[in-house]
Length: 179
Image (cartoon, rainbow, N blue to C red; front, side, top):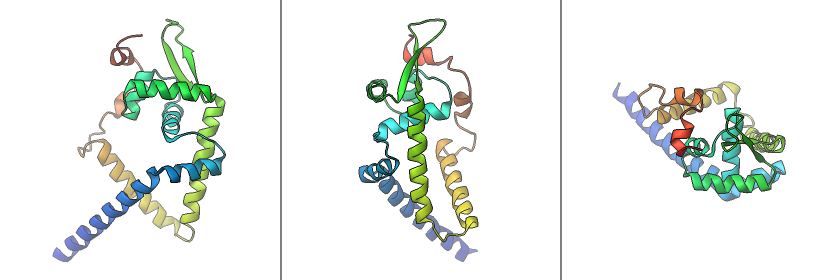
């Protein structure tokens, strides 16, 4: 049993080193620039992250909710939304009940931008995985999914705040200090 524990410890240390190197590489500006150039869609990393939140949510969101999902401050999101509006990638929509309340939604061009960048990234990833058996890729996906899930839940396995994401935007008004 001791030998198995040593292998697991070495494997975990190697996995940690590889994840750190991968995280560094994936967040380098040069990597982002290469992917958006392949996609032919000039959008910065922060804008792309904001678009991803909006598209994944599938409904217009208030700026405070976007900031919460991205883990950043509201003024940062406000600036980013202005830039994405200028590019025609997002738009503001008013609440039917209160026209002062505005939510942000991707435009068709914004959703298309995210799709094209994702396809370019997937093509690059596919090229780097050429020759790797599908079952090995599936195993890697499962390992990474488990690491990601454990990180999001704080290691409790309780599901963290997933219920809040699936719920209504009712808490947005309080989180943002009203309209």
